[in-house]
Length: 441
Image 1 (spheres, rainbow, N blue to C red):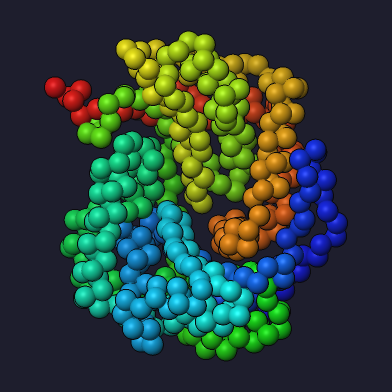
Image 2 (image 1 turned 180 degrees about the vertical axis):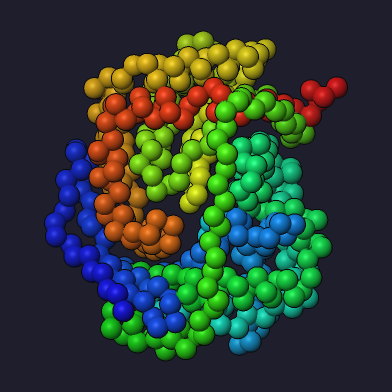
């Protein structure tokens, strides 16, 4: 059994923005492989119980996209001891709230309760892990729920293909399952047999592929006893084989056009494939995003929105993932501005980053922003629980909840220039024209 204990040594002065305390946690492993992280904070009578499974959309079989996201819904259907359709009623009746979310790399379920209902939260998550009811009525019901979610969030939402990556990833990835969207296709889900859903659960939802986080107003030894009682006897699942697919480098510009019936304003996008979220360069790209589009004083906003008045809105952001990331830059055209004009302006801003060091003043402002973000990043028990699980499962280093800020602090102006040159190359990107459906005519 491995234990880690982070002690609060002192409060860290964060420039002039305030103080941030280290997050104290204890981490250990049950005999069945369940990773457990405990964080005690008795300042408020609340507790969050979360379970993160190391399974996401990238783990799905070819032709069965959407399974991981589908399970995000399906595992609320009920268990052998929780009547179908009663999960949310039980949580609400006991003063709690709950939710779940899925990415390409993991699925996370959590409940937040008054702290006197900690045991209820542990029991419910152990029920979800030990013996959920997976039957035809549940699959059929959630199939309709997922279809409606797809319609509302992607099919009928302005710029939905950009927000959820369905109009982007298929161009940037050829081999890796990141080419598929998290929500998958309805054809794949409709074609799946009940036994395929049961097999997916057995393969990925064992304790040895999960991290349990309990954060909030808890007593440590009592909580450990309850965890052992509810989770200790759950059988070990099969060993999970991780996705290990390497993409060939992008060496020529990819051009594509996507149409959206929900928009009237066209957009120009540049999309680059970038390194894993655990790499330092992924953090540098995060900083580059702030330089380009974080606020009205950012470079692209000042140039394209304020001065040139060619863009209604600008965007630049990284999508950090476990194996590869993507970096998205874009602008929405103002008036009759051509997409070529937007592309030229964006390329000019990239060239500045590639050829000139940012000023010391801009660099200090950037550091202050990230220090402030660090201070605010763990302002709630629910947020701390999610962060602890994420750093453990995807980064393999739970200590990053306290130490990640040091990565940003150690990024130099030279790093920013180097990364812009290495990843933001014209021959390594997708150039996407995102147009109204009426532009087809």
